[in-house]
Image (cartoon, rainbow, N blue to C red; front, side, top):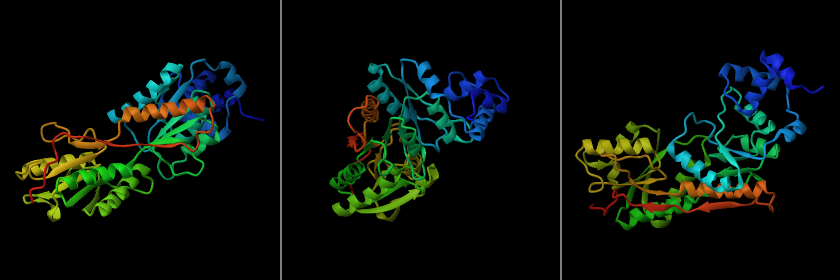
Length: 337
């Protein structure tokens, strides 16, 4: 016999209404309470009554934006995507929320949230290898759109940055300024890292080879010291004259170290970032940047999700790419060497 909400409540030592609050997020609950409820849900294999759920569903549907599973914080860049999704869906009366998975079993918590009817659709960001949320959402037949790419056969439709174009544009910009040796100061990638980070380093090397520019690849931790180590009193390591970076902490460390050595950006070395809006220079000035419009990408994802919610013809093969644009903030200049 299938477990009921009352069974879950008894097993967790809470009231049935508390079970509902945990599964739907209608009210805040203590983390210890949520953990007990989710453990009971898992052990009893509880599935909310879908008929009752349908009767209780509000006219206003709710869509969740889910960030990368390893993240513990949300930064301003993330909120640009969310605002774009909201702009696309608000005219259709669809609310956009950011669910926070707080239990020790986030996938089970997400599944229960979906089955409770709390989410009518999902925008899933920064999908990484081994990330099983996409498969689970599709299995539960939840309309799902990616910001990024999972490379999963038969996966959800999505919108992504055109990393090949971004890499080529970065190398091309510095090449036109006469820079022939460039340091690529990149974030370290791991087997479970988002595909975006893995793609960016690979496409950067490919673009450099095609354009005849030598790139010295350095994949370093997101730490200021890692950036500081690639510059000395004589300039950048190994005779390089410019830096391309997608590592915000490291590029700030590099700029501070350059200043300490009496070097000037861009007179002594050029700095161009890839998709970073929070990397600040010596006096709070942002670096020249190649990036996508995050709000527009979010809006495109929201529009694609709306098509899914409306049951419009098969968008499953839709893999949109958004080109990066250059924002020149004066941190690149002609090579003097």
